[in-house]
Image (tube, rainbow, N blue to C red; front, side, top):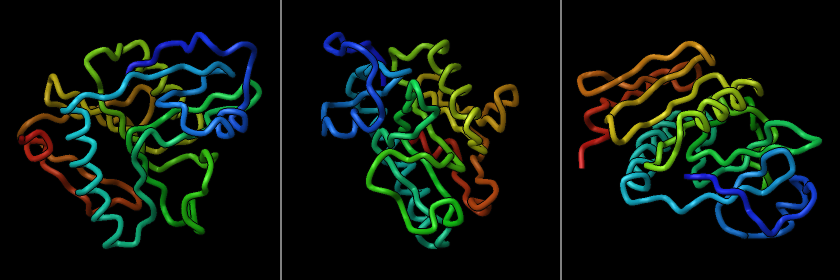
Length: 187
């Protein structure tokens, strides 16, 4: 999703303030300021759905933990609060033994998946990469529909590009999950 500053917010708000607002539409909280995000397009939704079905089924079958979609609010830091909205995220059962909480999540996911939209900039994505690894995310998959590629990050500087002919594979609690990149993008 593309982030656009929300013009109606004055002053800094907290994650608790944002949660209390209810459904105000897709947004993130960047250092106490609400940043609106545009709705996704069809390909973005298709890829998010396909990944959720494949990864979610694996997670349920193996009882590995929790696979969540839909701009999941993840705390990056507090005071001022920064909350990112991940397209898809996975938490192992050891990280969330009681299941997902009702509010924004303040435990680092094992895996975050971000799907690029046509208006996303790599500068914004680099900031998200920094944010996710700053809280201890193990792996980040950035799905690029235009290039039909998945960029797998295990740190801010360690990236592997997967394309048709390659297979996306889970690590850690997701070991055993595989998805050929060609199947991910097959319409």
